[in-house]
Length: 73
Image (cartoon, rainbow, N blue to C red; front, side, top):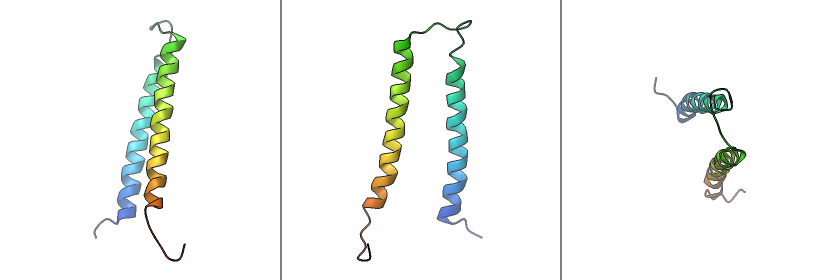
């Protein structure tokens, strides 16, 4: 049986979210001051960029739903 679009979305979303969360954990490891040196400016830049990426993700999904036209809406 062929995978539905919904099933494909769920499969890929779960995999990609797991990867994203793992990468964030790896970034968190950089906070160990015994192994790394950083400034609060460095941290602010990282967090700002991550927030921008999340905002862009949110906007992209919401715009997709706005593009669709229906007389019943």
